[in-house]
Length: 88
Image (cartoon, rainbow, N blue to C red; front, top):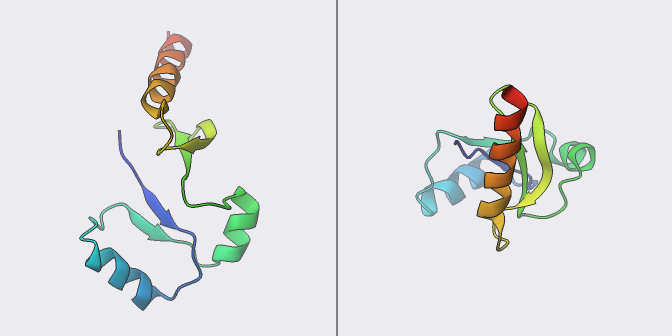
């Protein structure tokens, strides 16, 4: 399982990179939209805790997960089980 972070704020690249550096976030899977306003509208990303769960082929398994909500692990387990049943 990989976590990929996409910054949805309007801050410039320098500010964004500074924030990542200040918090010692790994930069391997950190991204930023070129046009954050358009991306937020297209993807309906209106808050910081939204996660879109996709499989290894990029198919959306859950369009609106909250990684900070209790029960998130159970949600992942259910999605993995459903995916496993579909593959068979």
